[in-house]
Length: 100
Image 1 (cartoon, rainbow, N blue to C red):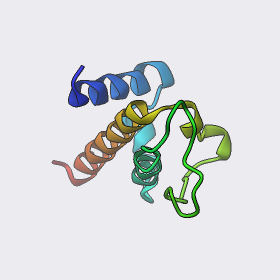
Image 2 (image 1 turned 120 degrees about the horizontal axis):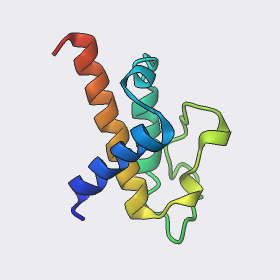
Image 3 (image 1 turned 90 degrees about the vertical axis):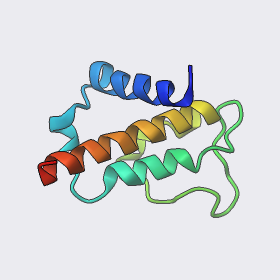
């Protein structure tokens, strides 16, 4: 799959498997989707599922409970696909909010 296809597949998985649909995403009014995307995107030095541990190496603003932080389970490509899907969800949320 291309990168774009991986992002589309991840967003589809988020909606169908996790139930994180438009109605759910519309609850996040304070940048939580973007914060989570940044957290996953800055996890791109992950190898074999290990999160970067250098001081300041990753964005510190995980927006939800630690139980939902699964960055340590994903390698570089999967983390980027998740980040892209979260950005897509935020773009869609903003378009709905603005009536675009």
